[in-house]
Amino acid sequence: MVDLSVEIAGIKMKNPVLVASGTFGSGVEYAPVFDVSKLGALVTKGLTLDPCPGNEPPRICETPAGLLNAIGLQNPGVDSFIDDLLPQMLDFGIPVIANIAGRTKKEFIALAERLTNAGVAGLEMNISCPNVKAGGMALGTVPEAAAEIVEAVVQSTDLPVIVKLTPNVTDIVGLARAVADAGAHALSLINTLLGMAIDVEARKPLLGNVTGGLSGPAIRPVAVRAVWEVSQAVDLPIIGMGGICTGRDALEFILAGASAVAVGSAFFHDPLTAVKIIEDLQSYCARNKIEELRCLVGAAWKNQGCKE
Image (cartoon, rainbow, N blue to C red; front, side, top):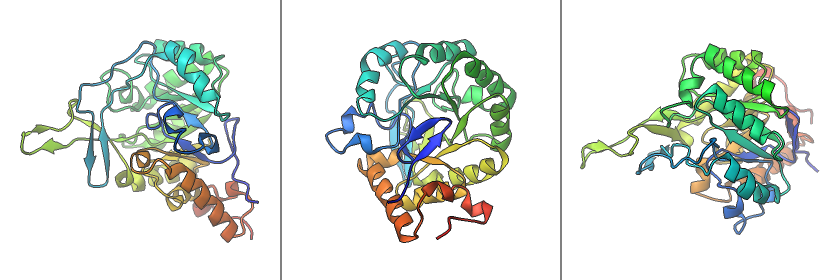
C-alpha cells in the first residue's frame, strides 16, 4: 500500500492534495459530487474581519489557457465563518486551513487571534491577492513589510502560519527568505499573476476591476520554477499550486520541492480533479515501486529519488 501522507508544519494529512483558497467554497457544495473527506485538507476562501461584498462584476473571464478573476475577497466575515461555515467544514474530518486577508497588520493580528481556538488546523496568510486595493499584494511585494506582518501574526497565535506569496515580484526567493526569517512555518507558492483582458467590441476591459489574477495551466511553468528556486533556498515545507490539472502536473511540483499541492482553476472544468490526482499519485508510486510519496519531494534537484 502506497503511503501518500504528508505533514505540513505539524498539520497531518492523509495525502498531499489540497484545494486552493477561493476555488472550493466550503466543500459542502462538492459533497454531492464526491467524498470530500478523501482530500488532504480544505483551505477556506480569504477571510476578512468584516463581511466583504467583493468587486463589481464581471469578475471572471476565460483566457486561452486559464482564468482571469477579480473576485475581491468576497466572504461573510470571520465571525460568520466561525459560526456557520466552519462547523460544516470540520464535519468532513480533515484539516481546515483558514486563509486570512487583512488590510493592515492590526487586522491580520485580529484575524489570527479570532481563529486561534476556533478549530482550524492552521492559517494561510494572504499577502498576495492582486485584486484588492488595500492589503493583499500591496503588503506582500516588499520583503521588509512582509516580514514585519508575518512576525506579528506568528507571535499572536499558536497555530502554524503558512504564507502565500505573490509571483508578481522580481525576486521571490528574497521574499521567501524574509518571511522564513520572520517565523513562517510553511509557504504557499504561488498566487495568481496580475493580468487583464479587453473586450474589443465594447472597447473596454472585460473585468469590472480592470485587472485580475491569472490562474490555470498558463501559469504552471512559472509556479514550478518558483517552487524549484525557493525550495533550494529556504528550509520550509511548500504547498505548490498554479495550473495543476493532473497527477503528472502535481508530480512536477513535488519533484521541484513541494511537499503538498493545491488544486484551483481545474475544479471549474472538472469537479473530480483532486480525486483523480490522488489516484494518479497512487498509481505512479505503485508503478514505480515507491512506498512513500514524500521521498520524491525535491528529487529533481537532490539528484536522488526513492529506492525501488
